[in-house]
Amino acid sequence: MRIRRIPFDIRKAMKVGADFDFRWAYDEQTSLVGLGYSFYLEYIEYFCNFVSKHSRGLIADEGLLDLEHTFLVQEMHHAKAHKYLNSFLCPGSIYKDQFHPRVYPYLHEFHVNHYEPILQRVAKGEREGVRDALLKIAVFESKNCISSFIFFEQLFSGKNFARTCSISANLGVLYLLGYHFAEEIEHCDVAIDVYQHIYQEPVWNKDRVRTQVMQVSHSEHEALAAALYCAKRLGVETDARRLTASPFMSYTKSRQIELIDADFDLNSPQILEQRKHYVQQWDEVWEPALRERVLREIESRTSCA
Image: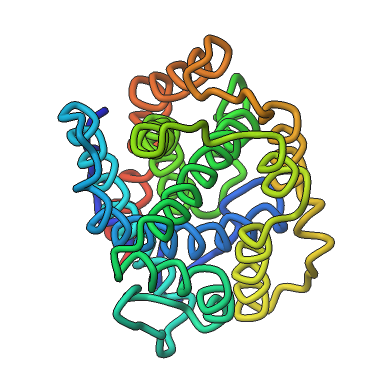
């Protein structure tokens, strides 16, 4: 694992301002879903940071502590980058409390119902509260790894990279999500290792597969709520059904159901091979090529200004 940094002004790359174009993907619904994910991902990263402050003392393995530190540094870099996009799309006031510094209005209800009670118990040092919080993070990281696979499969693999770049009206947002998802794939197993190290039990079992994968979890509603907000702000007509049926969301759900079972292991040969492949491709092929395209766009816009 290593700390990557976005090597240019991500705000300029995303054309934040009057020239912003939300259509970073191959269709409008997937583009809106990606914007929704941006808000949801920023929220979760601050959640992870708060929980880490109250759980690191329970980790007895020095090597795992080092990995957990790198994991958190990556996540906070993600949060900072997403904040530029999210603050532009939601310029109004945001809610904050002693547990979370940035809760957007349309995510506040989810915060109060699903996260704040856990964070209150974490702040009090309740072991079961910390357990519930670390489990929530481990489940999120497991599912988001599969989401990241679908992202690169649909948008980058094979001839899709050239096709996506030629279609995308916002290479900056595409870069932001690619950078983020590559690091999600890289560090996703750390959250599982932390939970299993502390509590000596597997993250996944039949009941959790049923409630967190087979059924629609509140996290999916959160991403949809953010996407619907973005659509309204941008004046794009859509609804939850169309967003859920978008290629990215529908294939992600299908692949999560296919791969995540009671024995799911992010370091199994099948999953680990895909993880290594996508991270290597991002670092060695896709990121350099996409960075070059983004820098050319920035230079072109600057010279024409």
